[in-house]
Amino acid sequence: MIEIIVNKKSYSYDNTTKLKQVLEDLNLYTQPGIAVAVNNEVIPKEGWETHLLKDKDQVLIITATQGG
Image (cartoon, rainbow, N blue to C red; front, side, top):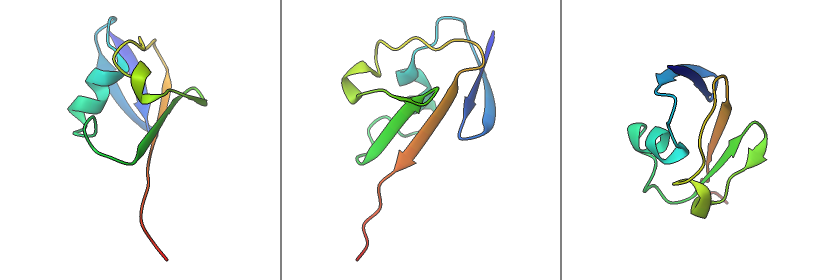
């Protein structure tokens, strides 16, 4: 098992967990207007399915909002 920190909250996952799985578990994978960074490196949406997470990775998820 590995520990992944998502927006400062800890989650446990299998050693072979990809970023897509975390986003799906949080019901964010299909949500429009989100940006994801792992250890301060932005991961483009095309890379979510293949980006393998490691123990203690810090995932930051930002949701765009409309405003005026």
